[in-house]
Amino acid sequence: MKKEIKINGMTCAHCQASVEKALNALPGLSAEVNLKNNSAVVTMTEELSDEVLLAAVRDAGYEPVSIREKKSLFNK
Image (cartoon, rainbow, N blue to C red; front, side, top):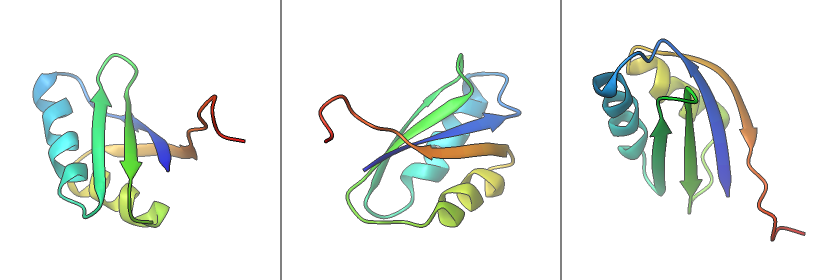
């Protein structure tokens, strides 16, 4: 499952790396943070609650704005 998290407060590559590191520290998850879009896309092999994902972003020092499931063109 993929989810997209919109994030406020990221202004540079260091911010991007901090959020990516915090999310990638969670089990069963890989994250890619896009500074230009102020978002992170997480791919989960284990189900994690939205609150766990949002808390990781907050703990890194940034403000999660929203989270939504990212649908693939191939999902039915």
